[in-house]
Length: 382
Ligand SMILES: C[S@@+](CC[C@H](N)C(=O)[O-])C[C@H]1O[C@@H](n2cnc3c(N)ncnc32)[C@H](O)[C@@H]1O
Image 1 (cartoon, protein in one colour):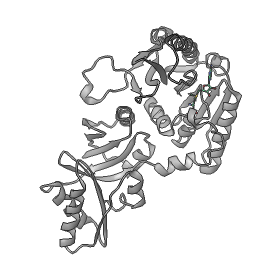
Image 2 (cartoon, helix red, strand yellow; image 1 turned 180 degrees about the vertical axis):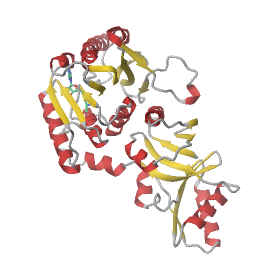
Image 3 (cartoon, helix red, strand yellow; image 1 turned 90 degrees about the horizontal axis):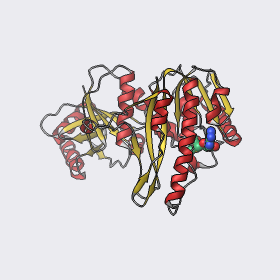
Image 4 (spheres, helix red, strand yellow; image 1 turned 90 degrees about the vertical axis):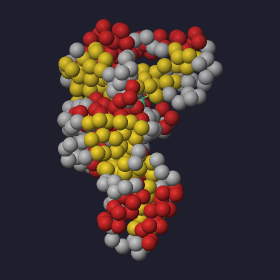
């Protein structure tokens, strides 16, 4: 069957997440094609799209191809007429305009059907109009039509965010969807042990918990961060009855973690580390270079400790920032040292059409006007 995945704001990292999740399930995504913020692929096995969509951080919706009986309008009219009783509510998006929706509505009316064309602006409108249950949200892409089978668990993300006690400084918080993507990129099992050594208010850990991870560890140099994480995890335990088997927190410098955690015990480290002082954009080159050097030192010390506590073949999904100065990047020079410590870099898959590109191992996230770019890396302990 052919499937369509509507990707989130960062299509490259969403694609990498999808590939990691399917490869972990031993399911092949055949002929993957990315077009703007969509990925289509053939999948031979039966897949539980609802379960998969619920666990992904970077995919907005999953659709399955329907029969094309000539053109998209005819096909959607045919599908809706066959599969819906009573009043039909439907939406259509992708490479079509409002005109397509109006034409579908007109044809259904001429068949004697009562019908409403819902102009969906986002995934929330699909949810609120129950279009997944009604099998009546369609995406048209290159003359192929996909009916939406599942959408992202937007309600879950909102519930986990709303009322969270220990997150006074949201600006320093990793977005939960991104935390989830990073956990999925690690490709570890929920029974494995996951550590965030710069846990802040605990977003990676709470997302891991909500994904069903049973053994979670967190550490941070700040006692306040540890208190926030403790509060947030306990709150999530109560609210959703999610109780980890192991949940240990340490107030520690990341470089000293091996004094707290036993050697060869952690399966994955997933972290957005300390990335230096927030930048205003008016810092001079020397200041930025100094910050890059200090952070490089911190990451090298941290990876020395990670190497001790990770199991063999254990992985680290880690963000390394780079700083913008007068249209150029000031990068942190630490990769060679991290390799020397005993890590190899696993490429985070580039988009299929860029596959021939060499050296695309990390995925960078940077928005124009931001002074910090975030490179996501996957390391494996040798
Ligand atoms: C970017 S925040 C992490 C945010 C976190 N991922 C979240 O989503 O809530 C960075 C954290 O690193 C911590 N930190 C700074 N230097 C550290 C060090 N040397 N070792 C461990 N933690 C450190 C800070 O206290 C801060 O909580």
